[in-house]
Image (cartoon, rainbow, N blue to C red; front, side):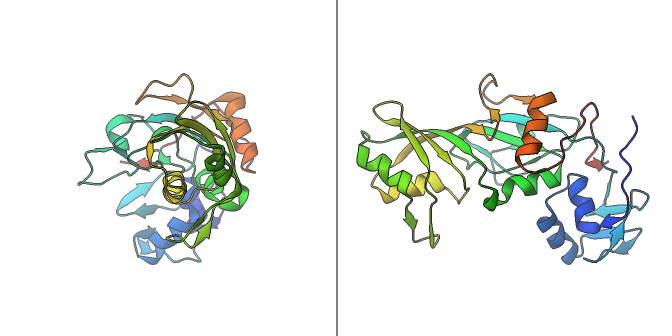
Length: 255
């Protein structure tokens, strides 16, 4: 299959296009001296093409081909990381895919539900940009009966002193005596748990059921599906990127 030809681009953008990481993380890798171009230590201002040999931690990066996006049902207990010798279960233990993919937006260890995995660093960066206000939808179960005041408090926004930040206004809907639906447009660390605790509730379960136009429905627990066709194009449009043509895959790293 023919690769997409890459013209001269900045080194950090090249790493993102190859699915290694976001541009911001690429800058850190370059500053740490972990990126080499044609055998020479890379710098932040380097320009590269698909004909250059680029390595990260001694591993050769392949030219970009067509993006891959997976919708994965992350179980409770799985840690969002590629390597962690202290974690009992990581993503690589459950996701066996021929293309190297990285998560776009974490779910904490004790939460479950939809996690998007991709080899496209530009997509990861666009999804993680908080100013874009991309919707993420969750079903939450708490330890005691819901009240209108509790849901209204979530919707108005809550100041979280440990993060020195106020949460954005959001949408909620009661779905049971102890359960509710919430739609967020930001991704603060353990945000839902912190919001509930600030109002005197403790979370028993969090399940993410939607990220923008991608839904969890139909994916088995611990399983995944490929995002393709119009659904994939819509995802790219929502984050402000050119929609991929589809039909090809890429190699993130050449072993």
